[in-house]
Length: 142
Image (cartoon, rainbow, N blue to C red; front, side):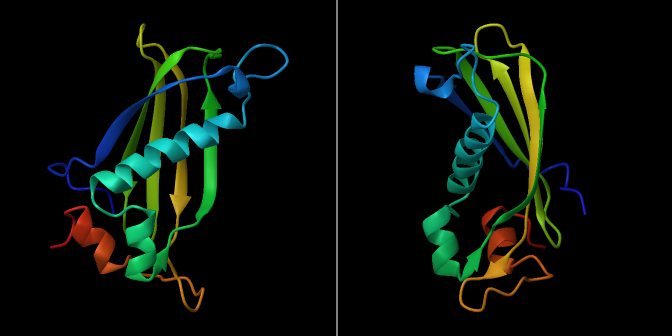
């Protein structure tokens, strides 16, 4: 199920890359983009009062089970990026799309998505239905 068009579930954060984010060639190491996605995803969940602490308290964990990254342009140290995370799917699993752009030029550098599933914090069993708490917090319950 796709999100209803009147629901606005996204967030944009800024992150300035550091020297430690780069590789020997002076560009941001490809593996760090998952960390950038994580920063935006965490901000998205916090925006809806469902951060990692609240997830644990609700009895559900949301591990990433699939991820994709498409690199369009390199980034370098001390470059400010705008990272957007947007909830796209929320039935049976959640899919979050990401877009990273250069804050100065608006040029897209990276895009991708992650897919997460709900599992019980106590039994570690996967839930095949999206827990009501997520729908409630994101304003998606009917």
